[in-house]
Image (cartoon, rainbow, N blue to C red; front, side, top):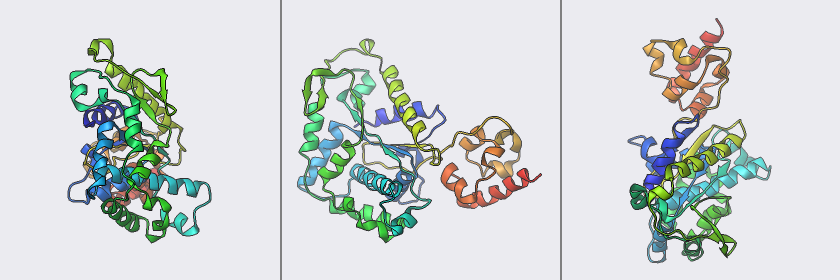
Length: 333
């Protein structure tokens, strides 16, 4: 429904110093893709679910049948792990949960992007806006099925048990209905990707706006997309520096993700960049993710352990051990 919008946001953010994850680009072949995108969410500082009328309308199907919906699974996982992270930060989590998530959970923000029909695939391609109102989106949300998707829940529980261990399976969010999951996502401060808001049409606390069809000459979508991505950059930059600077852009389709490496912002002063230090040494060239080669210096990661190279920079675990030894040799000479 909104894959073109997701791709456009991904492309804009890929030109920044953020490491951005989009399912269409970052899933590894041969792995359980559902577990991969949920692990990506856990290792991501900011998760951006894309919510539209089309995405919610499909969830009405749960009234008559149950199945594992990947969009619902992503949203549900985001809700659970973000609340787990918040409980750890607030010192309200049990010691067992604290131990289970240590070094595995980095999620700090869930930042939904609520999309008008102007950002649907058909209108993105034509560069058009559309008559649309937020009341439709919020009305759908309020009428979603009050049933638990047991098929989706089973996949989420299986992942959480494998990734964190059974101690996290007692959280109340795991019993949420479809409507409760979506309400939990919408409860976060969201970016309203509407073009004009008419406050005189306010409804249920949310602005309702109507935009007539018009040509792209009347509205520059590229500039609007840039404004959206700048908002995201600002948010990611505000999260605690101890977490990976990674962004998960959720694509509202039954596709999935596993994240590209997070890139902490290094100091450019002091040491030579890895790319020039390593030169034409193909032995180490193959071990270092390209994003790290281009942006990091030896001094900025000299203190990284192999585990940190994996979690913070996206190294393969085996390569991280080899490269850590190489780093030690460089800093000790």
